[in-house]
Amino acid sequence: MRHLFVLLWVLLVSPVAWAWHVQQLLPVVQGDTDARIEALSTQMAQADARWVGFLNALLQDEIRFNAQGVWRAVDDQAINVVTGAREPLPEDAQEVINNNRMRSEIESALATLNLFHPDAVQRRAAVKALIQDPDASREPALMRAMKQESDPDLAQAMSVALATLRLDAEAVSTRIQAARVLGDWAQPEALQMLNRRLSNETQADVRSELARAIALVQSRLQWGERLSVLFTGLSQASILLLIALGLAITYGLMGIINMAHGELMLIGAYATYVTQSVFAQWMPSAMNWYLVASVPLSFLAAAGVGALLEHLVLRHLYGRPLETLLATWGISLILIQLMRSVFGAQNVAIANPSWMSGSVTLMAGLTLHWNRVVILGFALLVMIALSLLIARTRLGLFVRGVTQNRAMASCTGVNTRQIDNLAFALGSGIAGLAGCALSQVGNVGPEMGQGYIVDSFMVVVLGGVGQLAGTVYAALGLGLMGKWIEGYSGAVLAKVAILLLVIAFIQKRPQGLFALKGRSVEN
Image (cartoon, rainbow, N blue to C red; front, side):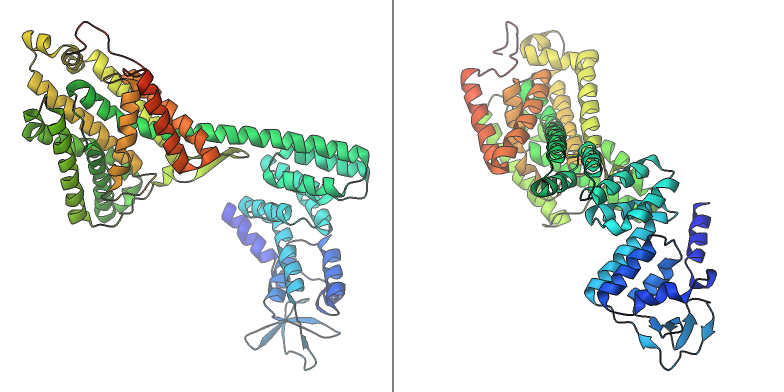
């Protein structure tokens, strides 16, 4: 049905479909620019969709005229605009010359005519153009469009456009009403228009209403900015949480300072890239679901590498923190070079699925990007799943037992070597999930993990070693605080400030936000 409406509209705009009088057209094509613009504005007051074909031809320099008629010249043929018939072009027919000013007026008139387009997207674009470039001569056409508009949101947008046209009206009451409408609109464009009008306004009543509208818009914009900072901070916190959760397990359980944690995250990101490539090659029709398949694959790839590293290297270095740090740092360099050799030194492109693309604007200054929203929900799900695993499963019981007292757990029959391996694999798998999520918001390259290792350690240390709840609170606090400070000092100084604050906090409270409790914490 929508396509049928569009087809009928296209037929209506054809000069053949409508008969009109040449005296309507001649003032628009002949005379000086001022007279032509005035004639065009007069005609636009009653114009409808049939003018679109004529104005488009005029804009393309295809119109010819004499005192008796107006023709459209196309491919050595002439079409009489009034009758639609093909005719020989008269010898005295003149070419219409449009300067830049006239072209601008024609484009503005075409934009106004789109207010009657059957496609709501085109009507919305026309309203937006009218708001950005108000022209009082378009008010009659806008009024007619408002009367027949069936979309409530578009009708509201048209009322805003009408207010922008009337903000400079002669009548005081009209200006006051326009200021009220723009005050309720609460957009940055409204603030600019209201301030401009206030600087030129002399009437006390209007100035008072303009000042009230400006204060209202500023208040709403400030709230939008605050909520935007809050959402951005939560988004950053969700990323920090995903990165730090795995490290909280391995560092808290075995005391291993794993400098290769960022590279385990990198494995998850590249697993996502490989999955995308496989879907693009073999299942292009299912490309929107490649990310769903990437989640378990990223976890398994990183978990497998983590289990292998723990079995071959790390289990021989328990109780030797300096050697462990150096070993994991060397492993990180090996993994970086491996990724560089396999996938190249340049960043790889990973596209968002269509259901994660785009954004939604809830209010002025507050735009939620779908990829960030999905990652926020994904981090919440991972946190809940990990909490349930640690608190409700046999593996979680063993992990908690080994964390609190390794010797006693071993005496009760727990295979601590196996638990170490499974725990390190679990932490590595969660790092892989973080890499999968990060691939949707940032660049994926061989050195991707290096930028997050410091942040993840800050979250774990601030929250309290081995404390899942502390990791959550620390990620949330650092994410929100970082974005708040960034708004005042920039990204680099915000990073420095956060680091100094964490160092100062650890000096006063070395155990972090949440300390382990029990008689054998030292073990």
